[in-house]
Amino acid sequence: MSVCLAVDIGGTKIAAALVDSATNHIVDRHQIVTPKSQQPAVFSAALASLLTPFIAPADFVAIASTGIINNGILTALNPANLGGLNRFELVDEIQHITKLPTYAMNDAQAAAWYEFISLTPNNNTHNMLFITISTGIGGGLVLNQQLQTGARGISGHIGHTVVDANGPVCGCGRQGCIEKVASGTAIGELGTALFKRPCTGQEVYQLALEGNSEALNIIHSSAAAVAELIANLTISLDLDTVVIGGSVGLAPHYCEYIQQYLNEKPELYRPRIIPAKSGGDAGLLGAAHWFARQESHT
Image (tube, rainbow, N blue to C red; front, side, top):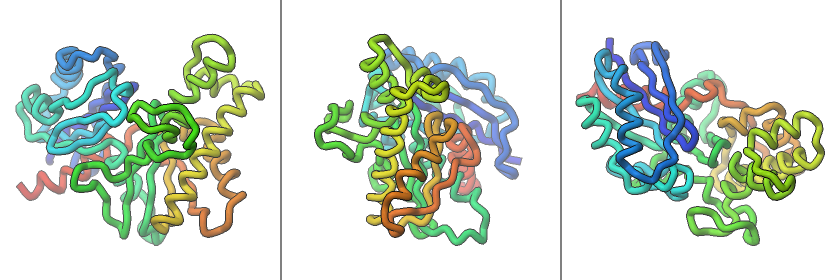
């Protein structure tokens, strides 16, 4: 039996899990808060502390990480999501910690792959988009039933698609990216400006659930922007299914709000919308499954 040490690195948390490659089920799991320090040494120390207890049973490491993963190096389109960390030699560092064969891919690409293979075989899905709406916004594409990673690891980085040309400047340098308009971070920033006190996206969402109309308007604005993005990508890529994940995407009623705004558009712009099945573990399980195939051929 092959055992994978799967690692999911996001802007909010870093999770590690042992995954049985035969069943693709998690055997053990732990997570920590993502360090906000811009010092690579701090990030490396956090990784070592998290991963060390999992090394002994593992045969290889599969990483799902936010940012662009190209030749094992993590490059952040929006460095703010990783506390300013950028150009980090992720595969080399984790291989140094674990002394195990190590592979890496983008977390949304990994999650997209897991959600795709989790769909029932007879659902006839050919072109699927996975969107994670959380600290930032990421995406993964499966076209003609093939995961798209791109020659430079960029494929699926839909969070930096402009939805408001007059919107705020994003950390990537463009103006009006959907990540800056609709993510959990953006929701918190809008709440902070509106309520004149520091707010997180989670606090704003909770206010909306409690019936605060101004907070609810912020959530609806986010969902409407995501619906617009889905419509644009559907007509460009002939999507038949869109899977919604992430802490915001899976929050109560959020998928319903997206569907509400899509229903206002012509039928050609309305793919099937379904919530992610695996919750926060899609990145872990997707990377484990994707690289288990590669490891089995080495």
